[in-house]
Every structure is written in C-alpha cells, then in structure tokens.
Length: 305
Image (cartoon, rainbow, N blue to C red):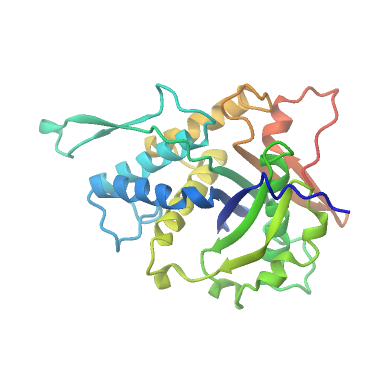
C-alpha cells in the first residue's frame, strides 16, 4: 500500500511555461500555495517601481533597449535567485537605480526578508521531438515530456523529510497544443509511478487559460516564469552576453564549478535542477546536469525518473 505523508505535505501549485528554441524546454516553478499571493505582491512591486503597468506583458523578446523593462527583468531574475535560497541572509537584497537619467541616478535596495520556499525544475528535450513517434501530434509529445518534467521535479526537489502535495498546475495557454489540457490526461499513468513523498491532491486542478485571458494576478507569475526560462536557455546556450541575465549566469557558473549540489548544508539544497532527456535506440535517457557535474565519476548517478 502506498504510504501517505498527508499530515506533513506542503501544498504546492506549479506554474509551467516552455521554449521551443534548440530543443524543447519545460520550466516548472513550484510555489507553495500559501505563498502565492506574497510572491505576486513582490513581483508587482518590482514592476511598479520600474513603472511597468499591470496590463503590460513583460518579456525578454520585446524588451529591446528600454531601460525600465531591462532593469525590471534583471531585478525579477535577481529576486528569483534569492528566493531559491533555503535561508535569508545579508545578501538577500536587490540593488537598483531609482531613475533612468545618468545625471540623477540614485541607487536603492529592496531587502528580501521572507522565505518563499519556491523551487524550479528545467527539463530540455534535446531533439525538439524530432525522434519521437511520428504518429503523435505536437500536443501529445509535449504532454509526454511534461510528465517527465513533473515527475523529475517532484522526485529531485522533494524527499521524505519535505514531501509535496500538488494542488494545481497553471499552463501558459492551450491553443498551441490544439486542445484543452485535461487534468485526467496529466494524472493518467503518473500517480502510481510517483514516489511516496510526491502526491497529487484529490482536488487537483489545471488552469490552461491564455495569457490574454488572465484577468487575475496569475498573469504576473506567468510573465515571471517566461523570463526565467528564457534567461536560463540563453545562459546555457551562451546565446548572448547581456548583464540582464547576470543573476542566472552567476548561479549557472556555480553549477559548472561544482559549488551547488546535494549537500544538505548548502543554501541551494534541492532548490532547483537542470536536466535533459533524449531518445536513443527507442529508449529514453535522462541526465541531471547539476548532479552529474558534482558527482564523482566512480559513484552511481541518482535516477530522478
């Protein structure tokens, strides 16, 4: 019988977005249900001090050289990196310009003094679905690989001491899949394969509204994760040197140097993971980038899936 951790599980909502450049990237932002409104409040505050109004979509594609937009995205990425840490310290602050005229620039700071407990999982399907069964349409391929990301994130980012109960998943629309996203299709053949500390709630819901149809504040988190995924992709692929992505680049460099890993005393412990999957000889293979970089070659690699 499957053991339940229901008394101790933390309720999480998951915000999902994707990128189709150089493979297919699934990004999952795990947000504690009780912290969602605080997260939105901080995102809106950062947008506000940069004079980004509530109706404006803030994304990397359209940022151009607009100083306010660029600073807003860099501040949001800095905030993201801070919230991944498992503790609050003296470095938990964001330094920013209070105006955009060089002759009157004044630097201020936002002190982050709340532990949001968010987590992030990025899965890249290496070949952009090209090796997957040609009888499957785009939506089916996306669903299969999304389940890989959900399972991998649940298994790596949580454990018996910190179990998860998944209450809801938000998708950035359904039109590109050419079908609505049904919750039964997400949980099908998945629930029983999850580890005992990773549970899908009985009242589990899916929200697949388009960004333009979101009249509530969830649109701010959808923009937030869109910027996060785009930044990780650009840094990993070394697409472009841009100070806007420095918060992500700094964390990625720590990855490559082996300074972020599985040590329980590390402030980044189980806070995020970067993984890749690919088909080879009709079998799926999975690499956990972060774990592979720090694990000695003579030790067996941990499987997330």
